[in-house]
Length: 306
Figure 1: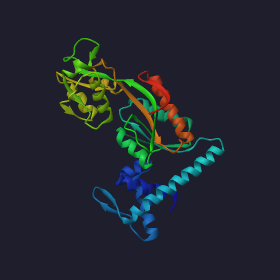
Figure 2: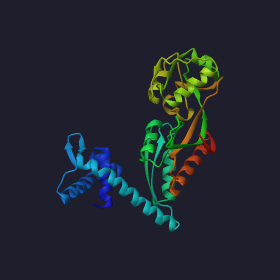
Figure 3: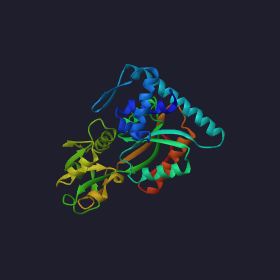
Figure 4: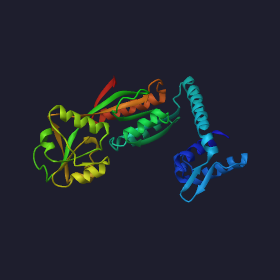
C-alpha cells in the first residue's frame, strides 16, 4: 500500500463518497475508484460496502484508518525535516478557519501563500468554532483560527485580534442614530446564537454586568437566518461587522455602534498545548494576522494567551 493509496483511502473513509473524496485529493473520481479497487484486489479483500448514496467502511477499513493516518503523518514529518534541512519551506498544513471571517480574506491569503511556498500542501476546513476546536483536540488540524472559546486543557489559545461588535437592525426599526445602548437593544425583539455558544454567553454576561437582561425570542446559529429575521420590523441582533453581507442586505439593514456596554469579539489561534507549529504553519498564521491588520476591521494583538 503506497502513500497515494493511503491518501485516497483516508479521503474516502472520511468523506464516505467517491466524488467528494476525489475533489478533496484533486483528482477525478475514476482515479480514486481505481486505486481503491487495486488495493482491495492486491490483498483479496474489500474495504468498503458500496451503496447508492456512497460507501460505508467495513471492520477492516476501521482498523486500517488510524494506521494510515499515522503513516501519512510520519511521511509528512520526513518531508518537512528534509525541506527544513535544505532551507525550503514544505510539508502539509491542515487547519481550520471560522466561517464568519470576512469572505475575501481567506482565498486571497491561500493563493498568495501557495504562490510563495508552492511546496506546502494546504488542507482547509471551515466551520463553527466548537467543531474546529474538536479537530484540534483530535489531531485532525494543526491549528484553527476561531472565536475565543471555553478553555480546554489540551488546547492552547493565543489572542490574534479583537473586533468591536455592533447591533444590526432594519432601516425601518432604527432609521436614525449611529449608536445604540444595551438598554435600547434589550427593549427590542432579540435574536441571538443558541444557548451554550461561547460568544452568546459572553454577550449576555457582559450585559448582565450592567444590569441589562437580554432575553432572545429566537435562538439560531445560522448567520443568514439571523439577517433574514432582522429585516423584519422590531428585530435586532448583535454581530461582528466583518460578517455583514453588504451586497445582500445593505439596502435593508444597517450596523449601529453598540455602547454601554461595548462588546468585542476575540479571534484566537488554537493549537495543541504540547506541540509547536511547524515553520510552514507559523508562516501561514503570520499571513492571516497581517491580512486581519490590513482589513482595518480588527485590532491585532500579539502573543497574549487566553
